[in-house]
Amino acid sequence: MNHRRLNGLREFLPRSRADALLVSGLANIRYLTGFTGSSALLLVSDHDAVLFTDRRYEVQAAQEVQGAAVTVARGPLLTALIGSLKRRCLRRLGFERGRASYELYEALRSRLEGCRLRPVAGTVEQLRAIKDAGEIEFIRRAVELNSAVFEKCLGRIRAGRTEADLASAIDHTMRLMGGEKPAFETIVAAGPRSALPHARPSLNLLRKNEFILVDQGVILRGYSSDMTRTMALGDPGRKGRRVYQAVLEAQMAAISQVRPGVTAEQVDRQARKVFRKHGLEKAFVHSTGHGVGLEIHEAPRLGRREKTKLEAGMVVTIEPGAYLEGFGGVRIEDMVLVTERGCEVLTPTPKDLRVL
Image (tube, rainbow, N blue to C red; front, side, top):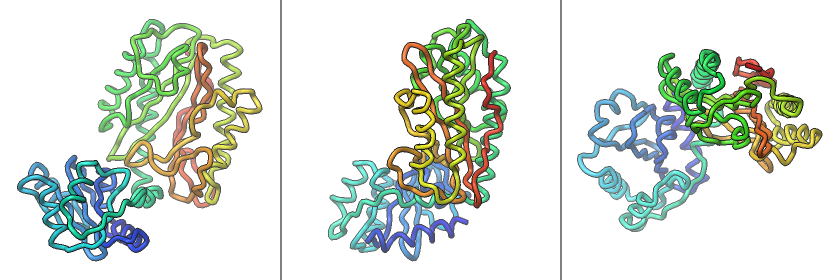
């Protein structure tokens, strides 16, 4: 499998006008080789691949890495890399523009005489956007675990509890049920704070007759899941129910557009069309969704002016929201797999408004 992924990357080298590509993003390195350590660089040419790591990962790299030779640095990792690059006498070296540190760039620029550096954007990420059968199965399990954690924690939602307390309980339950760790900082936002799309859990108390927004994800076998549900602790009132139904309608409308050949902006536009009908267009302040895999945010992005065409094997979130300052917000998020003929909603958690 890793040989196939590396060969897919090699097909990009001529278009990048590079003799080799230096991969520094750890998620990209894991995708290409299987290595899960925190210290690595990967050099890929048209005929070989070499992973550089340090002595902490010597045994781990021998166990995990597929499709690439392993060089264990006895000193600084950059020193081992530069030495290898000099011996290769490369004329053009590609590096990951969005992943390489300035320290790495400066070391390459100052110590590789006669080698032209070429910034390359999104090459491995483009390969990662379409998941294979194994990846889809890992994602499916992570989604199912995330939903099970949510259901288990529903009984802990009650007036007088703090947002931070509930978020901590969710994270703890993820570990107890077999998750590696949260895919991102769990969001719990209640009442007016639910109008903050990325609110951090606070010591504010959950109160009656207010919305509670929970956005959570768990990592399983390296793959992320992502789900948002908004509940009401008591009656949210006529306005709250109206906003909730508008968001649910927008989410369902966007999902109905997901299929191969449709552009990312078309999916986003469908959600905005519903919000416009309900007079809530200005209350939707982010994009409709994003890809999910080894990272919680990856290609494709579902937003305005995004021309990427959806393809079978992509896994995306559909997560429109409406946020009203001083009142509260609603977001509903599912993970959706693009199939050959349409799509499959992976998230099993019900979406009708729950009044607790």
